[in-house]
Each structure stands twice: as C-alpha cells, then as structure tokens.
Image 1 (tube, helix red, strand yellow):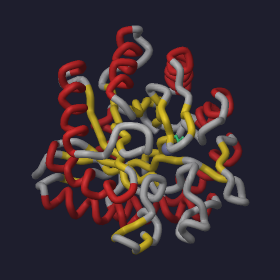
Image 2 (image 1 turned 90 degrees about the vertical axis):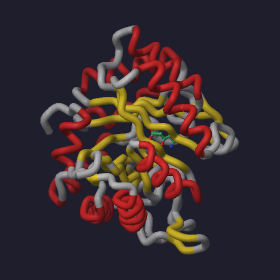
Image 3 (image 1 turned 180 degrees about the vertical axis):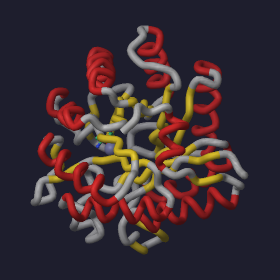
Image 4 (image 1 turned 90 degrees about the horizontal axis):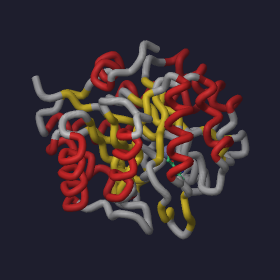
Length: 277
Ligand code: KMH
Ligand code: ZN
C-alpha cells in the first residue's frame, strides 16, 4: 500500500464565471452534485465558496448553509469553507461561513497581490481569523502564497493561535505572487520542514495549466493536492473541464502512478486530526 494522499476539490471559487465555463456549479443542488462527483473521483475534501443565484460571489451564511446541507445529503466529504471570499470583502463578511460549523476553514497567511488587485490579510486579521476559526471548532488550513507567509503562519503557532499538526496549502501561480514552478514548491516544502519538522502536512494548489503537473509533483514529493475549477477550468489545452471531477480523476490517476493511496473522507479526517463531524 502506498503513502496516503488527500485530494481536495475546489469546485466553485469566487472569480470564475459562467461566461468562462458553463460547467461552474452555482446553486446548492449543483454544488452538491459536483461535490458527489468529485468524491467519487477521489476527492476527500471540498474547498467551498458559494454564489448568489446570479453567480456573484458571496460569503453569506445562508448560502453556505444551503450548500453544506445539500452536500451533506449527497456525500460524506469534508467541507472546508473559504474565509478568503473574494478580493475586497471585509473580515466580518468573510468569516460568516464559520457559523455553519464547518470541519475545516481556510486561514490566509498574508496580504498578497492577486492579479491586479490586493488580497488583504494583515497580521491582526490573521490573528482574528485564527481565533474565530478555533472558536468555531474548525481546523484551519494555512494558505501560503509567498515565503513570508510561512513565517507569518509560524508566528501564529508561536503565539498559540493554531494547533499542531499544521495544514499548509501552497497556493502557487497567482499573478503577482509566487510562481507555480517545481523549484518554488521544493524550496517552500524545505522551509516548511525546517520550521515545523514533522508537525505539518502540506498540499499544493497551482493555478491554470500548472494545476495538474504540480499535483503530480506533490504526489511524487509525498504531499497532498488541490484541483478544481476555482484554480483551473481546462482539462487539456483549449478543452474545458466538465466540472471539477475530471480534474480530480486526472490527479488521482497521476498520484496512483506515483504509488500513492488516494484516501476517502474518513481516513482523511483521521490524517488531518479533525474533530468528529
Ligand atoms: N478568492 C480569493 C481572493 C480562500 O478561499 O481562502 C481567496 C481565496 C482563498 O479563494
Ligand atoms: Zn478559495
């Protein structure tokens, strides 16, 4: 049996539009159907954003509750709600999904360029988000877009605001931030090991055409990976992916090729040390 690998499917996001791809799920029913397809393809975690019926990104508790209930009715995946939302949303707005008591939630570990915009995550915001995520009972996933974000995350650890084991997601290839290059991932993983030893798990979420190659590299390096329409809408050059499930399937195939064992949600819960759902 190979070493376990957790696949996360980011099935909605905040930026992708129906104009870019008709395969983007928007309603709670569409989101739940896609979550089930991704689970069947090998995803253990769904990274969740939600939309208003017109497709606008929202952090509305009501929309999250609808989507989470619909997902729960379909499948047993781990739901990881976004606290990043969309660029320009305020902290309280972004934190609303925690009221739904998700099993996991993202904790963005620093301000970063995000295309031509700025995605704000000041250190006081990070502390507040860490406290609120802990109070909700969710396990944070630390979103790292740059090397300095890793230092900022470890500062949260030293301040006692996050618990071991730390779950780190390297988000690579956002325009204006660290590129999705193998050398960057290898450097970041080395730094993580130097800072946290074996007290951390890591995954990579790479953008656009880098998504599947970087997921395969993560499989080779012993990490975990996130794929899905939030970060990449193409299955092959010029070929839209019909939802996130085909991307999960590709990542799972590559991972098995590297001898990895794709884990189901119960095993992922155990590996990530989540509270009981
Ligand atoms: N939509 C991005 C600005 C997260 O989910 O925590 C932020 C994002 C990160 O997607
Ligand atoms: Zn997100």
